[in-house]
Image (tube, rainbow, N blue to C red; front, top):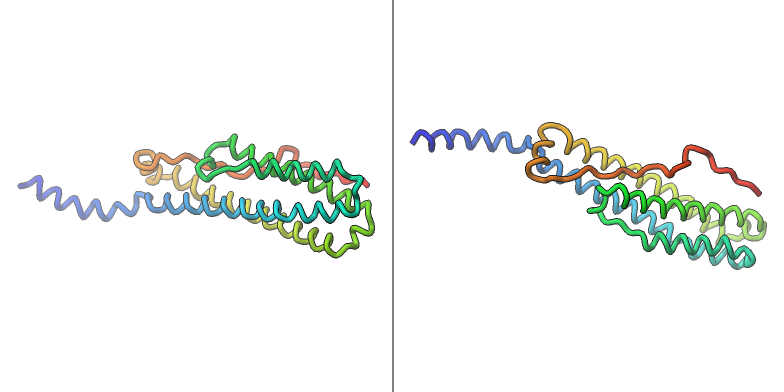
Length: 195
């Protein structure tokens, strides 16, 4: 009878300490990482959707710039083939591969915009200007989405590494750290644009 009494006394104590184990908080933080990653993918998709229109507009003015146009088209195709699921966000190689494909597309777009500078009629074309402004806005959205993703990753990674959540993660959830979005190699140097 004393064991039963002891367990009955221990049960309310267990219930009061349960919310402090971090189980729900860790789950919420992981969901925030997944949602932030979806925002990153959505903004990259917006950019990918704008590219065909931009290429076609430039193509109408600069037909002999086929190499640059082909590089943009190829880079966009590679980006479309490089997918990463929320489950792969703990894999540094998968995140790096995704980032590399997006970086290649960014470089190809930069070359395309340099080509556009050579054609005054194209620069004055309202469709091109609209697309260029949309692309600039999208690049800003991409940057904001990556920053929000990195913030969500930081919160999640901290939540699974601090006490008492680290015990909950170690014994119950067994979740791994998520990979933040990192700068491309060489990003510390300003690009050189030559006309």
